[in-house]
Length: 299
Image 1 (cartoon, rainbow, N blue to C red):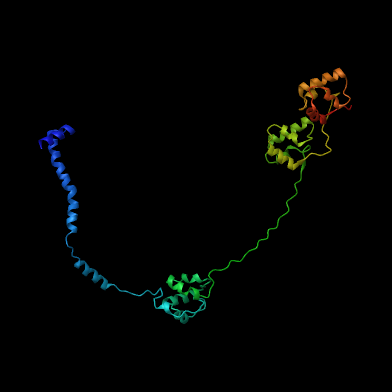
Image 2 (cartoon, rainbow, N blue to C red; image 1 turned 120 degrees about the horizontal axis):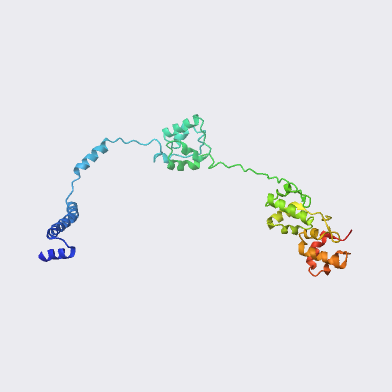
């Protein structure tokens, strides 16, 4: 015991009184922990006498009143001769002969008298007290459909003719018409009109891609809603009369080319043919085709 006390004091740092207390507390805890299972084990092994409880239970059963339910068919009822019947017209005698308990037959007749009607076989289950097993035994004799066939409604869809799309002239329309196009707002419509005026008119829908911020979807929509006349003649600048400033104002010419044209005109005299533009080194075939519709040499 002295060694145990010394061990407790060295390991846990207890004082002498604390060590003595632990030596008393530990055995008490062990006794408390194991006493309950030991007692239960001993109690179970003891003979039990339930005679008193049995007598009390017998007395309770004797006081109970047993009654047969009137809501379901008894086992004897299932052996009645079954014949086809319609619950909307069957008499009480017919129902009883089919095995209906009298209270259940009375409820069925009362349901009919109040305006109730059976449309399908399963409607019989609406009657209070109709047992599912009794219903199953009668189901094939009930002269009613299992379910009501829904009428087939044939819908005739007449395709309405789509209204013809009335296209507008791209070179004569105004901003009020352009803003109706999906993807084109107030700013873009004004920008399209302004660019058209600087050019002198559109000769191809491809020129719409030159309008700042006008995307391909809007161009595609605009192309489907508008047209450019085949005989349309854009406004033209006279190469021999237009000033360098007037030439530079055109989007396809600008300042550098306008200065070159003015210099060529000064060196070689007036232009006789539009094709003379090809003699200028900075004007290639693609550039020539682009600016040709907007230039003339006629006086």
